[in-house]
Amino acid sequence: MRDKTQPNSATAGDGLIRTGAIVFFVGALATLVTVAPLLLDTTPFPTYMFGLSMLMGVGFLIAGAGVFQSIADGRRQARGGS
Image 1 (cartoon, one colour):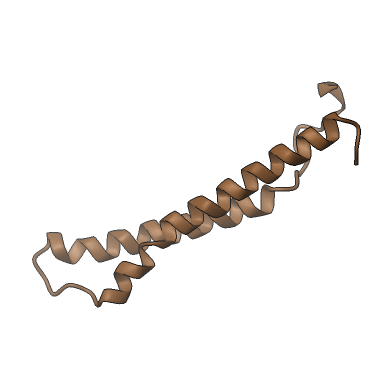
Image 2: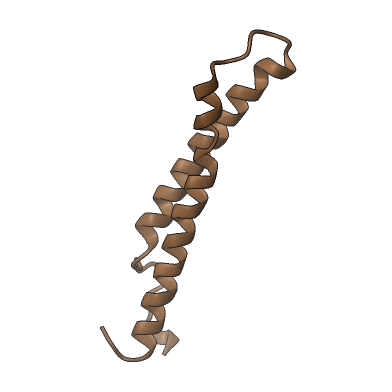
């Protein structure tokens, strides 16, 4: 059955995984920008910047949903459904 799968074929959750990765890295960048003034002994950023750091978790959840969607699609294809 594996010989019928194309090596670079897109699955159902690929878009969610890519979106989740982008959101995660934006959150990681916001975390670095937020923590830097605390380590450099300068004026800290406003509180909403700490909220932007939460995008790391949101991106992780979006990517996880994409992984589960890909798993479900793979199972559906293995069972013979479309």
